[in-house]
Image (cartoon, rainbow, N blue to C red; front, side, top):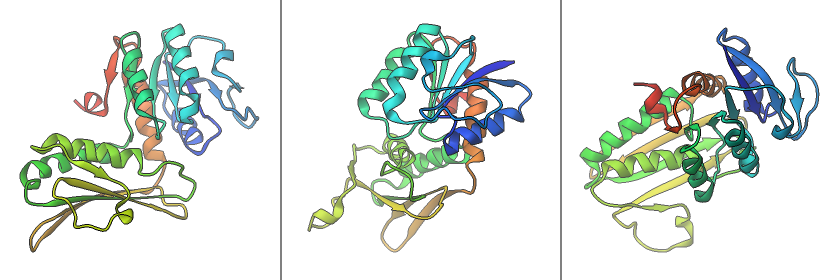
Amino acid sequence: MVNIIINGCNGKMGRAVAECAKNNAGVNILAGVDISATGGCDFPVYDSISKVTGKADAVIDFSNPAALKAVTDYCVNTKTALVECTTGLSEEQIKLLGDISAEIPVFFSANMSLGVNLLCELAKKAAKILGDSFDIEIVEAHHNQKLDAPSGTAIMLADSIEEGLNYTPDYEYNRHIKRCKRPEHEIGMHSIRGGTIVGEHEVIFAGNDEILKISHSARSKALFAAGAVNAALFVSGREPDMYKMKDMLK
């Protein structure tokens, strides 16, 4: 049995993780943490992770970048594995995750969906074949409550594509402020925010007289929650290191 703490348990993703965990016989929710430590959960909820009692095997963090330091401090001090799912982290915060992975096991992915991670691999392979002669654009769409843009998944896709290219591309987020022809070595990223869109990502390879599109559509938050719970099961008890979705899928 793997005991988990859900950081951000009262958020939409936190509630989805809790529901998924309840239906997994190998997981027990030791506690939840949320800045709004209200009732309604059948497990104890604290307003600070430092107040959690009992020993957890893993923390699943679906919260806010501002909470990362408290979470990482707790995990390092208690030698608890961390499944980091929060999007919008800065480069400095991502480096922090890498630093603490020398002390504890850390599972980090900008997207916990199996399908999205397969999309990354397909886009990387397409870039190896098409990248020199095709322009590459990424379009992502999310609900109107999402704070960061472009999405962490869009950046993850761009990073995967870069691995398949024989040049270092420039990531372009604000093309509307320029008046010039599109440079060759560029990956454009475009964000749509509206309604209750769970998550849509499309990679466009635009060449002369032909266009290739690869896309993924998330229809429910449950798939991300299932990925996070499976990641907690995977990373619990492992040696300190930085783990990715591809490690779990081997």
